Figure 1 (cartoon, helix red, strand yellow):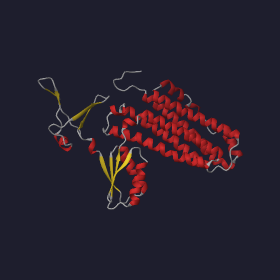
Figure 2 (spheres, helix red, strand yellow):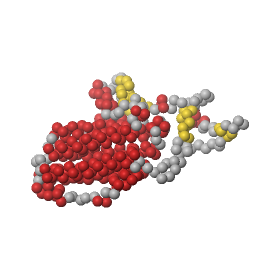
Figure 3 (cartoon, rainbow, N blue to C red):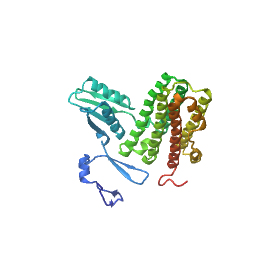
Figure 4 (cartoon, rainbow, N blue to C red):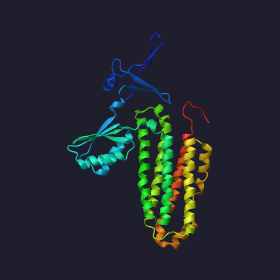
Length: 334
């Protein structure tokens, strides 16, 4: 619903705008209530009544939900920005409470606030100021980089233990990506202000996009780790060297694209994108490797595909870097 009001001016030159009565009653606004007025880059002004954030809670019924469904529902509410998520049921047994605790541990800053037979209350205590988006993006890149290095080693040496370690680290990336998504959700719902995160919601959208692309890069490292377990023979060094060279090239695209994004470096982003038109098909040496090692044909093909897809995700980040460099309203022009 949209309300329209005309500005009134008092004898002393003060500008007044009345609040809609039904909205004020619903929000508990009355005589003496303190209101917070927050301007943003678009020129709009947000009006936040005192105590609005204290009502930022929701209830989720546990009965009839499978584990995976409950996990998805809790994560969805975490991303939406709820501070308190109450999981309720007629009787939540030890196994059910343990399940909710396990889900909470997979989310940054979520703690169990209280437990009874009928309610398990989760509380997100993470302060957005403690997790600046640029630092979070850098950390996601560091983890994904290390995952790829170890995934390749696991593939080329048939190291199953290292492959499992890569798969376990994917959870660290997921937690940070969900944290970025939650911060964006809080911004969209006006539960945090742009001053708290140091950027507008439009700018934060780009961080959300980059985090999503880096998550996919990490997912491909996990995919290669899975494939590493199916390798029957260690690839000869002549092929291993070419694989590593190709991997370095793909990861350099990702690293350079992230650096261009964080630094708002248009020239650097364009240098990354200049290689986009030189996309390779299946290279001759890979075809030769598949012919020489027919038992490894599928793992080699999947590895080759993941390396190319990581390169494409890097190009996507570089394009986002160009979008993010566009000045916002009122900030001038390039």
